[in-house]
Length: 527
Image 1 (spheres, rainbow, N blue to C red):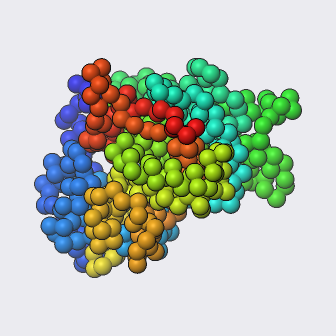
Image 2 (image 1 turned 90 degrees about the horizontal axis):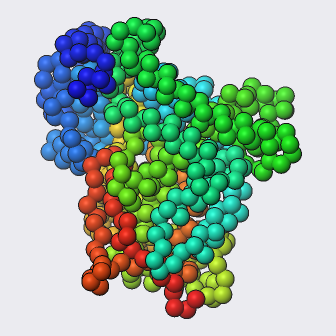
């Protein structure tokens, strides 16, 4: 019944539509006499629907690639063409060196047109709208410009220290502080102690995305003309639902931006990403770039990504259902995985603390200027991102035209999925890849190759994560502050027995783990 309500059609109509779609694709295909990449043999019309893994797909795809002796895997699910890239070399060759045709995104009218998420440049198709938005984001979040946010990152890291203690649950504090950081960086607005209206409006909009269980769940995503039918028409419940969810999306886009403009009119605004955009809007030479719509949309894109991160962060630690939105900022998820790793490797925690103490003499808190002198913490964070591969399958790219590669025909409109997990666990690059070892990023003959593969965790080509420098900085300064003052240790139950954390990760693309009440943060004896 749930699937029927999602599709708003009956099963025979769905099968007919799928059959017509597959027949159409079959008639229009041109393979220029070249074979498709290897893959499991599918069924007529429905293709590989029954082959698609229900869990840990990244491992299944990697297994198939090894069995077939290929770095490219081809699947077809009722007309949806999927190409999995299992190696770093193939990802670079296609997603970077041929980025002009491999930088698109799958278009879903339910998500983008009807629910109003066409504002997000992260999910936008490759084109002029994406270029303008990406340019605005890059100007503020490139490796040099992001340094302007360091005072705010430092303030947030230090704000949390007095709130920690032996029996304090650190995760709600991190969630609240992260939300405040996102609001301040994007709009310069102060977060309320509880029930902040701007964060709540964003969370409600993001919650609506749970109504899209997977790409193409709605028939309108396969037959785009359905988006034009009247909402009152029988069978058009998806239109009526989308109209309600669209209101939530518009609130998330407009409320904080309008609040900032009101503060600017009163002369009380604080510099921020959106504030800087509005300051530049008056210049004639940039008026086409700094339009009200562009500024609202790119600000909301960054804000939404950050707020969604915080929600996933809570999902990880409290076992709630993970969201399935199109974009994820990585900072807080990785922070949680670092905490989990510290519980199992107290020797590494002590090594990080020794480095921090050597730099600060135990008499002050860390600064960003200390980062290069605390190399083990930086290596620890990199290894956590590699080891856990918490985004094991990267957000799909979209191939815009037919292409040829390694003697294979790659059809246009294919979803191109990088298998990040396979890249991060390539035993030819990472010796003993299933062992957590930060030293691999500090010594060895292949450091250049290791760091190149590590960079793949942030994405490829023109779709690389725009907030990666900000995320890395936030990670480093937050952990440096916590470990300078506190230890992270396993908790004990009522009988005094140590509680071992559960490291079994769930099966969603963004893996989950449960940590609540499995750790404590006592103050270090020397402080």
